[in-house]
Structure formats: structure tokens, C-alpha cells
Image (tube, rainbow, N blue to C red):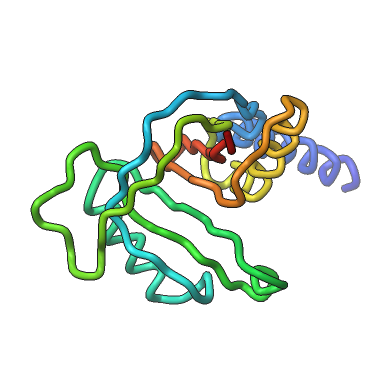
Length: 170
């Protein structure tokens, strides 16, 4: 009986490892310094509890506007993030402002010329959380002697591709 349990554990470990690799669980985070030319976003600002229904509907509306979901995470004062509060701009990046902007959405322009960028290609189940990627980027910037802004920009290129950027203070 004990042999069957050990065999089952080995088999299950092998199957889980296979799926972990297939989902991109061992994908490296590519870190670079990039020159960019300002970001024009169409979106809506949100300040409140992260798991609220309003936030979910905003994600859905923003995804309908364009191909890429873009989330700008602004810092909050105190321990409010530990209580589940966020301050975000949720939208999509545009080159030209569309004529029919949904109610509650506005155009925001971020004046940015350089960013530190992290790119990762992995499924959401095994992808590091954006705040973990932010920590990696901030350590990378410190090694490069770069001063960074307090906010981050998450760009969801597809179901498997995430780019996190932090503007460099010049």
C-alpha cells in the first residue's frame, strides 16, 4: 500500500511540475531602462476597496475601450493598502483620443520620458504579483542609481504578458 502512495505522490508531482512549466512558472522577469514618449490614457480613476464590484465593472469597461488594459497605481498614505484600499487609474492607452469616450472616463496624459520596465510572459496562475514585480524593479533601479516616481504603470498586453513600468525622475 505504501508503494502506491509514494508512486501517486511522485506521479502527481510530475504532472503539477509539467503544468507549472507550461504555464510559464519559471519565466524570468526581463528588466530594462526604456525611453518612452508620454502616455495618453483614456480611463477612470478609482479610490476605494480593491475587491469592490465597481472596480470590476471599471476593468470590463476599460477592456472594451482598447486592446490593452492599463492600470496606474498611485501610492496611498498610511496603512490603507494593507486594509485593501487602492488608488488607481484604470483604462487603455491610446494614440488618438476616440470621439466616443464613455461617461465617467476622461483623458489623462502622463508626462514620461524614461521608465524602468519589467516584462514577463506567464499565465496569471503562476505569474508574480505586480507588487512583487515592483519590488524587483525598484531594486534594479537602485543598482543603476536611478530615482523613481512613487507610482507604477501596469500594462496587460495579453492573458500571458504583463509589463510593469515605473517612471524615472530626471
